[in-house]
Image 1 (cartoon, one colour):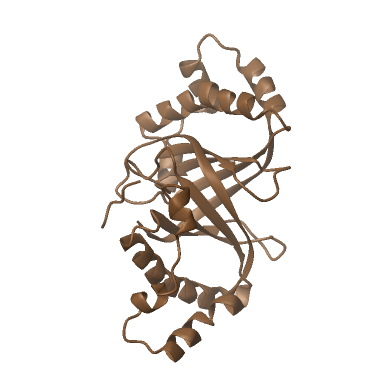
Image 2: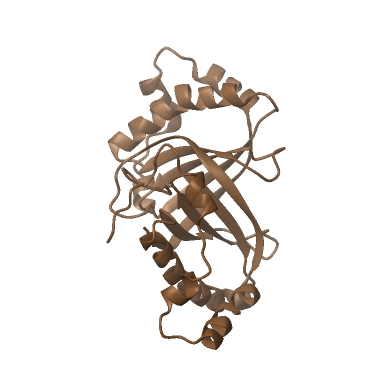
Length: 256
């Protein structure tokens, strides 16, 4: 396996780095299209491998959004990581498909790529900027992600980020050091609807078993902040942000 320099440097030293940008694409796949969609993503994986080798991305991952149903807005997610805005602005070239499938004719390539749109609906794509993180240096991308979508009031960005860094990041650092999670990160939305879900936190685990090793939240709080009152901090947290929703993503495939 090939270690990268570092954005979804969802990993490295780690997969994450200070200037990481993640572009998240939300997909809705109908039940009868699941197999076709996954086969199409295997085609795209070869293209993303070429992009990685050319230094155009740091990471690509395909995730299943767990516990979804027919009424869910999306049920699969793809994530691309970039080291900076320059990489993001130059993340595609017209010859990528041909380079990824040498020997295939233009007609064969067109037929192959034409399978993409019918296999799924692309609901939207959103760019996120990495704000803060702590993690181990995993040998491969993290398998389980808990995604928390946070909404804050206009003009309170600094206060919210300060709270995450001063109160919660030290707790996540302790969890990482104890081996009860792989990492934690805070991301800010860069474009799109900026009235809700402006921030996202990501709790990363290498397996379901690792999650079972977590200490109760209140106990962890007491260890990290022995002089602070849990109830008061909880109240402050609820005032600082609204937890819109929480999702569980499971990694299906990746390039890194």
